[in-house]
Length: 191
Image 1 (cartoon, rainbow, N blue to C red):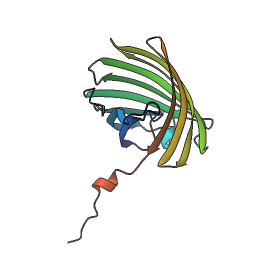
Image 2 (cartoon, rainbow, N blue to C red):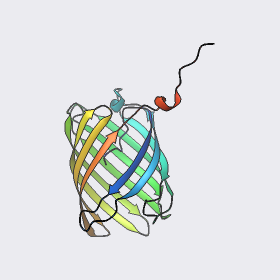
Image 3 (cartoon, one colour):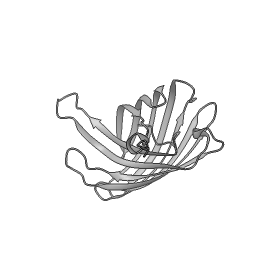
Image 4 (cartoon, rainbow, N blue to C red):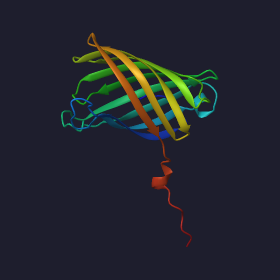
């Protein structure tokens, strides 16, 4: 839910999506807003334990929803992140061709509490315009619980206005990582 920053590693593959399980009335669970993204850190900075801001890019394919009601899209994003002792700020700008083939523009920011805290506060603000369809102004407050370097849980309360109509959500998420080398590196055999 908050993973838009230029993270610790220089390159990663991100699989993202939202699972929906209705509480009442009961119904099937669905996967929406899914995508596969490549993230590359162009300029390492303080989030990678260097000095100065980190600059990253992310691009990927927006996958169809499990309900079969959408197509395929694409996105390209730029991310600037800076970490201080008191917290981290991420600034994001993204353009996309949505699953319904509308142009989309997204700008936002995330403010996190100190990275050394195992449980830290987070706030997110964004503006998004899916041209010809929806305009959204959103804010979220929440917490991130870093269990270990490759595992975090998050929870948040979101309030947004989409086309002037209020949207209120409780969000929960999970972020986990694994090294890409476990799939590609094989030990060299001696001859």
